[in-house]
Image 1: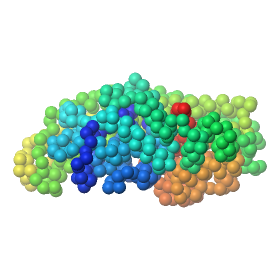
Image 2 (image 1 turned 90 degrees about the vertical axis):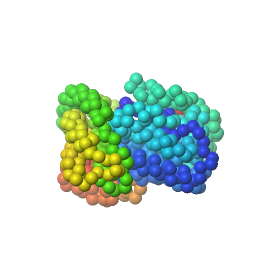
Image 3 (image 1 turned 180 degrees about the horizontal axis):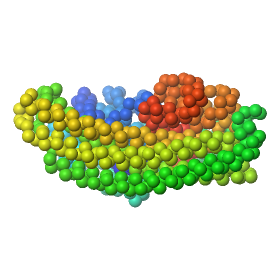
Image 4 (image 1 turned 120 degrees about the vertical axis):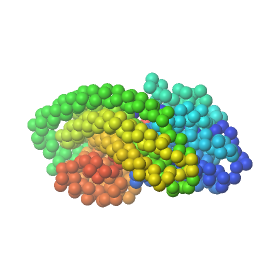
Amino acid sequence: MRTLAALLLAIFIFDLASPLQVRAMSTATEIAKGAAISKEVDRESLLVDDPFLTNWVNTVGGNLAKFRAREDINFTFSIINSDEINAFALPGGFVHVDMGLLNAVSSDDELAGVLAHEMGHVERRHFLSLEEKSTVLGILVGVLSILSPIASLFGGDAGELAMTKFSRVDELQADQYGLQLMSRAGYDPQSMVDFMDQLRKMSESPESKADRAFLDHPVPSDRIAHLEGYPQLDNPTAAQITADAIHDESEGRFSYADARYAQALHVESSDTLASSHVAGLQTALKDTGMHAGPGSPLQFAFELDPAGRASTASMIEQALNITRDDAALAREQARWGNRDAESLATQLHSLSGGVPNLGQPKTANNNLAQATAALDKMIVDINGALSLTADVMTTAPGLFQDNQTLLHEMGQQLVDSEATIGTQSVQAYYPGISAQMISSSDELARAVDRARGAVSSAADSVNALKDYFVVLDTIDTSSGDIKPADMPKVRAALDKAQAAWDSVEAMALQSDDEIYTAQSRWLAARITMLDLTSSQARYDWFRKALAYRFPGVETPEYATLTRSGVSPGEISCAAWLSYETKTPIATLMSQALASGETCEDMALARGVLTESMEIAQGLVYQDYIDKPHKLK
């Protein structure tokens, strides 16, 4: 998951718009102006067009939109490739969601709470009049200064000064409306409080940059107290809680639903509906003691081959040693990489006074328009590279620790004389998990090394960007265009600079893909260690969760799975890859067994967005471990 240090902007705390309400603005005007700002945001951002993530956000947002109050607005949802935990709405219903947010929520319901809050700002018309062009540009500069550190750097403090935020009253109204909207759409309202509580804990981190938002907005604890005063959360009846729990269970949120049923039974111990569901969930969540059938790979692995324990213990120790070595190497690379990044920031800052003032193109597609569009693209490349490399170098150390902790747990369970039959079944997968942890740690080390390389290349690419500025500064653009005679030297400088920054961005993207592949391997191992295949009934519950998360994907029958020896974590990953690539899961499993590749290997080789894989695996894992943060 994304590092908590990425909490630069917290949703519900720091939003983009103004405290003034608009009653006179027509819907057509609102949509047109919102669309113009949204277009500029999209132009300055790295947008994500991933099948799984796009469907996830659009499905949740679409479900909420069915119950919107304003029939004159059609909401649209876009995903920005930024590690910030943030989302924002623009006039006319244009909602943007950062990847960092998608990595922070643990369920559809938490995502619904965020989107419903943002939609509330649109529904309640929390916007400036936008009648004056300067105001429109002010908000636009403010939005882009948040999305684009380089644009803000080149623009001095204008972005900060132009930035406007919702008032405290607006925020509380959006909270209330969001709670009502998500409840009407059938989502569990408790999840909205859960995510606010998660943000509260994040904001307490010393490296959090959310403190300035508290000056103008209620702190999360106050907002939680405010929300808990509404009927959806204020002493709900057992029937209401049970209804929410049934919804949670239908999404595959088995651990969360179990806690909600317990809450219902605490309110009314005679709630037979809650009791009946709790009994069913025990199969999904508890080790039943049942074991795979005679002759299966799970049985032979340890019961008929005790010597396999010693071999597996040796594999675990080897994986631990490699992980420790990789971690030490990555720490050193990250230390130097961060120094290099500081030097790069200084270089970029030195360019802030050299940005040429080109004026506005006279026509949309003339030479000047092409030159400025190319500069915009380079700014996107620079921001993308800086964001991705920073994410890699700050996240990797904690991920090495996660790998080591998992391996230590495996070693302890291997020698535990009181291990359950279910645990013994999981141990059949230990050799494969050990190999996966070696691959994960190696990928983490390569990702950090590649991220540092991207930063170093970026430092060299600054000179190419500077040369482009110099060329632009020597030509006359007062006519709103660039003369044809000047275009050869402009084109030469542009091609050189663009090639340099495209190379930097490609290296940063590869580093990012590697780190999310590494995290996905860890999540696959965690899913496998949940013991989801030690009985037919237990596996059937797992299939229910996968069917909800990856609609239309047909997972293998239990008998097929046990014959193959494929782990639950790999099945979950394959279900995502099947959804992502529209390839039958049986085909993917056959390819993996024939080549010896894991699902993660295939995803990396196919060039799909590996952060999508990591988010999907994280959601499946959360189905079995997530619990409400607070229960009244």
